[in-house]
Image 1 (cartoon, one colour):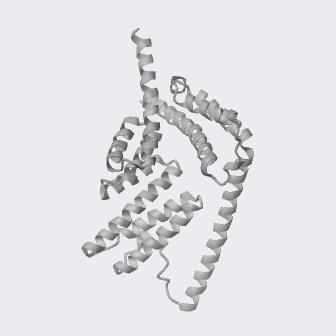
Image 2: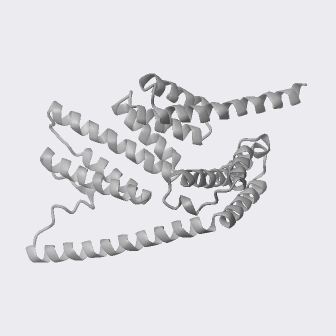
Image 3: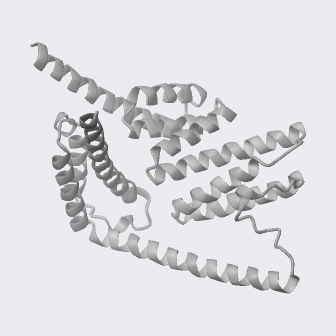
Length: 295
């Protein structure tokens, strides 16, 4: 049992290094197409060839059979090489994160000071203070509770737009906590609450994907599909999670369902191409291994 436990730990660490390599390559590919710092990346054929080579290795038999030590060595090599090739890009993104964190700290201090001053002047508790949403047992009117939900959602959207996915996820989660506190809703009110919850779960799933918290993202997608089993976005995002977890057959099932609902959706079609490509590689590798074993 101890040996099995150690083996499990080793496999988890190996997967962690593999995910780091894949995330680094995905980040650089995405940044080259859409990031505001994308112009700082190399535009040479050598750079793209390097990224393609790492991708090919990640889905190779050699990678699957690599030891933990080998996987760690590969991560160190990829990190060192990409730092060397993309130094200006990484420096710019680090500066942006540092500046954003400083701005958020300044805003938080200013908001806390203003709130304290307002409370001192009024001598009353501020009803807008929803930082303790989990402990808020007030039976507020639906309109007031929805205002608190949307306040957190809008703040989360701004944080997400700024690339602050961790704080965005926390705000989306807080909005969902408020959603659980509605009571005695009319059919129209319940429909609106469910539509809002669906949007929040979808946004939370995307935040978790950005944070590489794939299990959390998967749960959020499932919650979204409980609310709307035909949500193309939820199916697409769950397929994205399954693709990143290398559960290609499960990803295909979600994508087939999404394709039936939205045949012209470009994102769904693009992901299907990627999944099919990896499944073909996997089958080719399995065929080669079977041939090696049985002749």
